Structures are given as structure tokens and as C-alpha cells.
Length: 303
Image 1 (tube, helix red, strand yellow):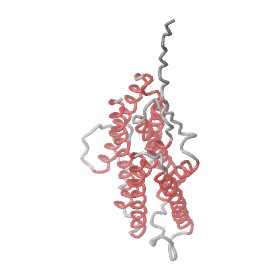
Image 2: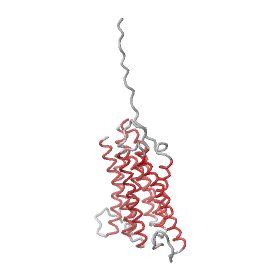
Image 3: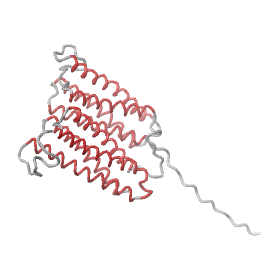
Image 4: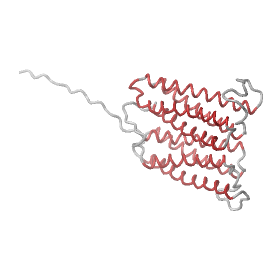
């Protein structure tokens, strides 16, 4: 399990930075820095220009993540009963990285159409969630029941679902060109942008409000639970801090007309928040440890 933990954490870290680098590619308009796929205009590198370099670096990191995902799945399958609870997430991550590769190719072929870019990001967030669950599973013993469907509870599912909808609405805002529609925060009293763009921005902010309330309720409820261990409490506190920072960065992005650098940081914190909340959710899916029955000692009766 030591190797599985190392591989799963390394894969999670590489996946997170892959999403952050993908965000940098998008906000710097480097998505079409390479005309071809998988090579960059027929070249493997080195590349001297900024936009091709950013795009090809993203592809190289995606290749590394793909290798890590496949290796991790093979190690989990070969580990027998020790990692049997990780087989589902590990195999799911293999399928999802294959889908992401296809979506990435389609995005390049279609010249970064908004719908393919948004779909690429949303699948990336789901992929990050699965990789996070796999990493958490490496720290859970096989002797503990682990049910993501039943164990976390309704509030946990509502919080995670709402946070994912926040990510979706944020992607729609960016790809719809509404990121600078409201130069004020939290309301938009006097905007000169089109009504449709303003509506998108306000819908996202409303979703952030609802999602934040549900996430805070889930985390605070967990912190107050007596059965929560130190790992759950630390992750829950980290998620609350990240949520506060994310709201602050979001307001700063709005007040600065969604500058590229701030927008990139905004998505980086959003990805980190998503990762930590999913980790808390996965830990909450643990049941009590199953104790093996003690052997019964039989005494021999002597007549």
C-alpha cells in the first residue's frame, strides 16, 4: 500500500497542475498555439514561441498524467485484496482520461469552439474528483466499509453537487464572454453589457451563494460530529479557508474586469477547493472498521 499511496498522491498532484496549466493556456489564448494534434505543427519541441510552448507543455503534462493513471490502475489490480476498494475509482480514472484525450483532440480540431472548451473543463473537474477519491482510498484500510453512494449522507451529496454546478456556471460565464459583464460585486446595478451576459454573471453569483451555504453547512456539521477524526477536521478547515479565499478572489476578479492573471488564480483556487471538498466527502464515506472475530479457546475437560 505504500507504493499505491505514493502513486495516487503523485497522480493527484500532477492532475491538479494539469488543470491549472490548462487554465493558463485558456486565459492566455494559447489554445490554438499548436495547429496539429498530438504534435505541435509537426514538431515535438523545443518550441521558441510562447503560445505553442504553453499548449505543448500542457500536452506533455497530460501524457505524464495518462501514464501515471494507467500505472496506478495496474498496481491496484495486482495488489489483490489489500486495494480491492480502490479498483472502481482507479479503473474509472482510466476511462475518464481516455475521454479527456478524445475531447482535447476534438477541441483542437474544432478550433477551440466554446462548447468543446467548456466540456473539456467540466470532464477535467470530474476526472480530478475521481483521482481525489482514489488517493483518499489509498489511506483507507480494506477492513473498513466504504460506500460513496450511501455513507456520506444527503447534505454531503447536496454540497458536492452544488459545488460542481458552481464550476459549471463559472465555465459558462467564461466561455460565454460574460466574465467582465459586471464590474461591481456582489450585485450588478449599472452594467453597460448585454442583458444576456449580465444574466449569466448574476446566475453564476447566485449559484456561488447557494453552493457556499451548502458547502459550509456540510463542513461545519462534520466538524461538530464526534466521530470525525483529525484528518477529516483538518481537511474541512482547509476547505473553509479555501472557500473564503475563493470568494475574495472572485470579487477581485469582478472588480478588475476579469484580468487574465486573476482569472487563472480564480480557477486554481476553485480546483483546489473542489479537490479538498471531494476528499472530505470521500473520507465521510467510511464506515466503522470491521473487527475480525476472536478465536474461541476450547478447554479440554478431563474426567
